[in-house]
Image 1: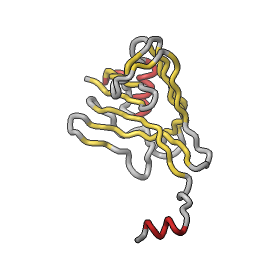
Image 2: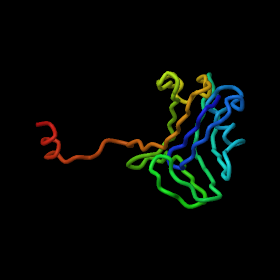
Image 3: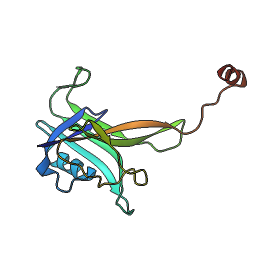
Length: 156
């Protein structure tokens, strides 16, 4: 019985024994991966837990350290050993980067999302057979400036 964790961009993927995920929350999955990162590597993250009810999880950084070269399961490209780190950047520029996660129920082939009122709640009921996938996304800080002539072309 397993729960999977993937962090896109640092090539981290691990299958965890469902018994090692103590409370069934997203944070419990992350903590289990820190303790059981897989062979020949380390995994870590930086977060804070808010005081909202239900508790909220705010991530800023994920890292994976590979002690030997590894191959991406998605692209098949081989990468050198070393540290792979991705961090949020919430300074308003043309865009900012934030961590986003979703949970996939492989048995029922459905995405299980947190409630809209608590998008980073730590307790959404992670169960055996679920996969938690994190990805760093860029969000535009504002609309793109477009010349009046370009706007006219777009709306004709």
